[in-house]
Length: 100
Image (cartoon, rainbow, N blue to C red; front, side, top):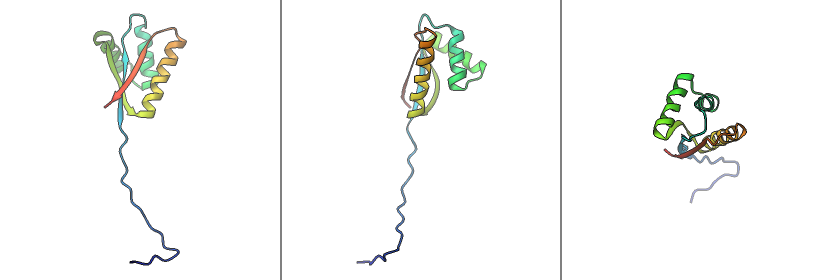
């Protein structure tokens, strides 16, 4: 059996795991304005006006649209921001996430 000296450092190498990613979606409703959806996409998801418009149209035509893909905590925060902003503006806009 190997003898370990008192001041010998033992290095343990752990493999870094890539965090799971989550897709954040916006859902269509009959009350939230298109302008508000575009504003949310630009403000909270960093989209430019053109991509925000394209996503808003996808939400409008298909019922949901992808806002972005993030680690869990970031996705959760973005969804909370959307819901808080929608509530403050009296809109029923909803977002959700699912694992990539």
